[in-house]
Amino acid sequence: MAKVLVTHQLPGNRIHELPDHCDMNVWMGPGLLPADGLAEELEDCDGLLCLLTDRVDAALLDANPQLRFISSMSVGVDHIDVSAATARGIPVGNTPGVLVDTTADATFALLLAAARRLVEADRFVRGGHWRVENAWSPEFFTGKDVSGATLGIVGLGEVGQAVARRAAAFGMRVIGWNRSPLQVDGVANRELDDLLAESDFVSINVALGDETRNLIDERRIGLMKEDAVLVNTARGGIVDERALAEALSHGGLAAAGLDVFAREPVAEDHPLLSLPNVITTPHIGSATEATRAKMADMAAGNILAALAGDRMPCCVNPEVYGASSD
Ligand code: GLV
Image: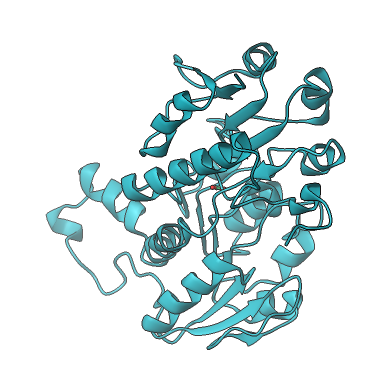
């Protein structure tokens, strides 16, 4: 019987189908499976069902030539060396689609929270600073309107488009940039530099890859308006964090809402965390119970298909299936 390593206990229903089709080994913790544990547990496994915290690089694949298929419970697959997997004929599954609205909601939550300084205001009240002598004033906690403002969306994939729909409902003017030009209803296309210079709010919704690593670098951050807000719910490596912190602390940008960091979990002493105009969340863009269950079901579905000798329904490298692939 084929052996499959599952690196975390998963929600959803389909994971319970696996033991009928394979010898399933689930890492029960405590915590996440460490890298050396992954290398050890993967020995003899035909398949791997992993999370975005599991790094699957060429060395791991080399050490496990028996591995035949990988499914990740994530839409992003930047934690997997997909080229190395493809070179070895290993299909890599992911979970697109089901997290689109949930992630767009999280993006908008961060955008509004940053625009209206919600976390700062919450800390102010809880910290006992809201007193009779400063109970209210015309400038008290003033933020930015989203209505009438311009939102620039970097990456017009499914999540970017869902963010655009929300922005339109909030009365925003929406402009967008995509790596391969794409026409999206209600979104006016711009060159990336022009988008950054024109936007009051910028939302990063592009996948992380070789072409998008450090896409929003120091020069591009310098193009943004001084009162602009940057929101990133995609991946940390897309934005130069040092340049972002510098801009946010010296009046180069108004605020940022960040769900993702280049290194996660972010270090406690990271310069961005000491800034009052930064709102952060711990990579929870897709974190609703319903969405996580759907993602787990898709990830398990990819494994079940592979075990049955079928093509994974959601595969990022379908070329491994040869000429008959879609
Ligand atoms: C979340 O970041 C994902 O890639 O699913």
